[in-house]
Image (cartoon, rainbow, N blue to C red; front, side, top):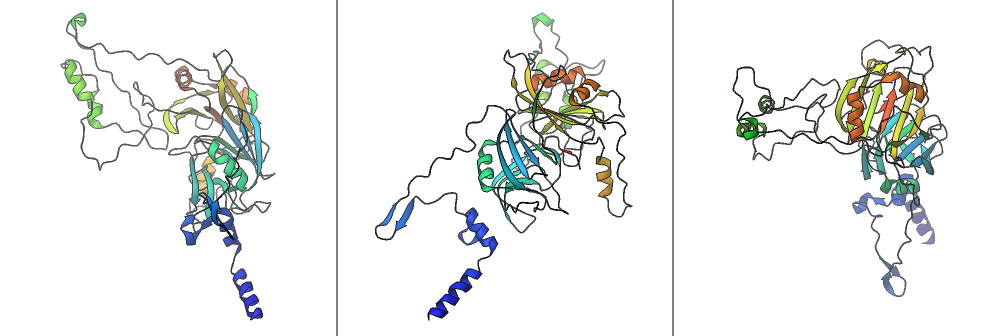
Amino acid sequence: MALVSSVAVAFLAGLTSPSDAYYRRLGYSPFQGGWYGSYPSRRVRTPSYGYRERAPAPKDEGFGELPKGPLQIAVNITTQKVTLYSNGVRVAQGPVSTGMPGHPTPMGVFSIIEKDRYHHSNLYSGAPMPFMQRITWSGVALHEGVLPGHPASHGCIRTSHDFARKLWPITQLGVRFVVSRHEIEPVAFEHPKLFVPREKPSEPSVAMNNNATEGRAERPVKVAETLPEHPVDAPTVPADLRKSVEVPAPGEATPAPGAVDEIVKPAPTDDKAKPAAAPSRRKSVDQPLKHTGQVAVFVSRKEKRIFVRQGMVPIFDMPVTIDELDRPLGLHVFTALGPTEDGSGMRWNLMTVPTDGTIYEDWRRMSRRRGREPVAMPAIPAKSPSTAAQALERIEMPKEAVDRIGELLMPGSSLVISDDGLGRETGRMTEFIVLTH
């Protein structure tokens, strides 16, 4: 009987796979309906006295008291480390395991675009990805996972349970995220061409029909619209609203003031099944859509344009003038930390990602087309990329764009200067994502 018992115990122990141990360590059990470790019972059973109250767990201090300011995250693929910066100061570092050969982790400039505490992979049989913080919609994220001490993932960035758990509650969507083979550390940076806060002008009131205007109503404002040049969801203005705000043609009667109010306002609807229109982008409007959140600005040498988003929603884009167009600008990320001591300016820091100035986007797009001949890699420019200061000096932005950005500027806002254009990862509900390789 003793021999049979020992054999049975050994057999049951052999049924426990490493994945089962991984589930138990994470507090996840498919037999108990999912996660159970997050809400532990306060009652424990003792051998002789039944149940008693569990002692309260010690308070988790996380990373401690952080310097007040925007967060930035840098992943070094060479050293397999992730570093957290707050207000430009390094506050924590942890281990990671990035993509293995054949499934590399993309490198470049990203930001956190989604968070899910109990996420499961929809690509790899529902594998658990606790504390998931997504940086691309194509499936790359930072999350807790197994750390063998070398690159071993399918593209995601695994980190330890301790680091992922402490990082989770302090990050928000839009936190800057840089992945590189080099050590990227933010440094304080000043330049006269960086944006400064501006007061928003007061909205002019439209004078309607009264005695002072001698019975003449003011002409309605015309909304100037153009087709979008950004491959994301463009705004659509209903046809009835477009017609209602056009300036009357010469010789036509100007609508009465009351009629203007009636036709500009869209008619209410009781159709609750019809979804509301998604937030969208306008290139140039006299009455811009109202958005909230930090501002992201992207200047592209390839497209010779400046693109502006707020709260991950496109606002406008305009052409820019770049000197020495055949010389690379480099990849530079400027982040607004907070107002200066006198309140008249903004403190910035800089993260420069080493690049060779090659424009890869066209090659990526062509190489993904099936049934085509392989596309040769783009040639490396003969001239070296500019420094951050030199890049700012070479770019001439429209005053209208600079003024508008200054009105929306807030801590956490960013300016990214790149040789490449808007890639496939920059899309709906993202900030500007720049891939380097």
